[in-house]
Length: 241
Image (cartoon, rainbow, N blue to C red; front, side):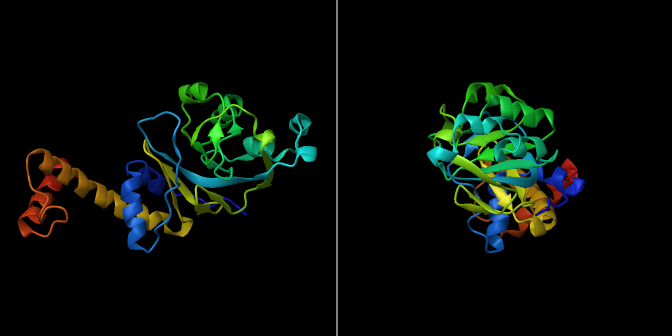
């Protein structure tokens, strides 16, 4: 399966929207299970991760097929994923929600950064997490882990539909991560979700400002009172949003 194109305008919009806001917009469309469970940033970056998914699937390791010598093979699926994940995409590991063995370490994640990959997500763990935290590339996992993935996991399929943190991820789906967590936007919805959530974010910023000034949320969030709708319109004009 090929990676879908992500419009630059859509990417820019999604860079400024929280995962929580995206989850609400997807819920409006009946999509209730798009936030990857149990996965958090190795270190906060203060900016979003946005890009199409490029996937790698693991299965339970079988000892006779999963020795350290596997890493010497140039066609090992994990190594191929690191070297072929397109720039601007997000590499997503299906590690079976098992962080006991690491999905990757700082050398491989550094290579992804050098190649221009937008981010990396696993529902397992990373080794060398402290070093990964120092990199610019956004990285998300369950928790630090030291044993190599070969001890428990066998890399098998590249760029196929996977499960990551109990969420279905198809190649080309749009991954968005913030300093809290990661969400999966079906590729065909990305443009309209981005447009809608930019509007939602503007309103939420207005609400936060009003609440910090002492306003009640009744009639404000949601804006069921006309006076708050008018105040929002004035706020947008003043803020240029």
